[in-house]
Image (cartoon, rainbow, N blue to C red; front, side):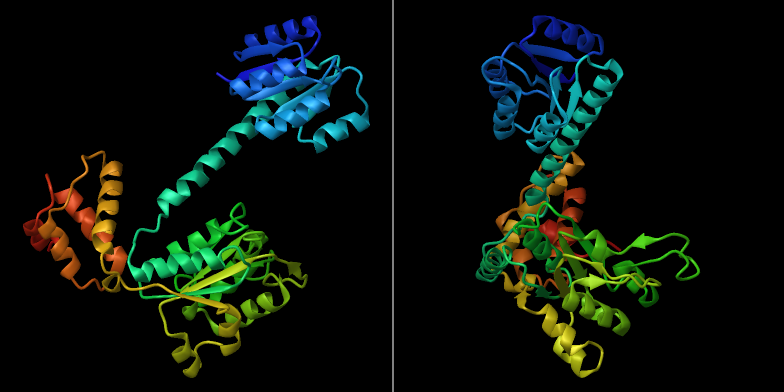
Amino acid sequence: MAKILVIDDERSIRNTLRDILEYENYKVDDAESGIEGLKLVNSKKYDLVLLDIKMAGMDGIETLEHIMKVSDTPVVMISGHGTIETAVEAIKKGAFDYIAKPLDLNRLLVTIRNAIDKSNLIKETKSLKQDIPQTWEMIGQSPAMLQVKELIDKVAPSNARVLIQGSNGTGKELVARWLHEKSPRSNGPFIEVNCAAIPSELIESQLFGHEKGSFTSAIKQRKGDFELANGGTLFLDEIGDMSHSAQAKVLRALQENKITRVGGEKDIPVDVRIVAATNKNLSEEISKGNFREDLYHRLSVIIIEVPNLNEREGDIPLLADHFMEDICKKMGKQILTFSDEAYQKLEKYKWTGNVRELRNVVERLAILCDKNVTGEDIDKYLQPLR
């Protein structure tokens, strides 16, 4: 049940609003002054505040300013003496909406529902963003990983383009995520493009969008990933597999900060930070004629080398524990622990698939082992069952 606070110095208005809102199944508190209302806002959580503008002592605009400093609760202003200038001032200071007295009941209820829906969406978004550091947590205290973390902390606040290099399964996407989350663009979108998974004839449409009718299956206009990532980060994964024609267009976009949709003529400005990743040696690809040298230099302002798992001394037990806890929680199963012998065998194994392979092994162990994981379990289940 949503909770609403009514702040109005007229008792009759407070009582009328209480009757209406309680009939609509809202829980209602009321206050007869701005100071009393602020005390309630500071001590309780509300889904919405209805706030009168003309009140003795602290008026509604001043009360609104104080509420905006301490809470993200939506505020709807109400007044029988307001003007257009007053309404504009209230909206500028953060009010969700402004309703004149006498109140139109239908408009009031619609506004309340819209404001509460927006409030719930903001709360959900914040909750999801708080989950990201856990979901994309960087596990590891080896010198190689500490060096990567230090570089991320230095580079993330800037707009510098970053090229992430490393073998398959080392966690290049994780590095890209953290560059975004620790940057001033963290509130913007993070758009990921796997350049190796998209056919060469479709990569340009994917990146730059297309106009209706620009090719046979273009039945409507579509925004590309550069536009979708505007104000945020565009992660070009496996960029070493991008076609030459797409490379040329990406280079232009980086040089001019604008793109043109396939089949279009209009230049569209974009504000995007580019983070690219590859498991290939781009210097060799350049010498073979497979990758543009000028694009490489545009992308590689900062290069981050993600180490192979075999190079991360001491990190395997930490990763194994982290994966086991995460997997068991999702399965609703008691968290399994590893014996010292099990850790030793995991550390001696040559991980060709890196962190991704280790996670798969831990998931296999979580499913097939009933109790603590022993060295014998590692011998038995390290390789996929045949």
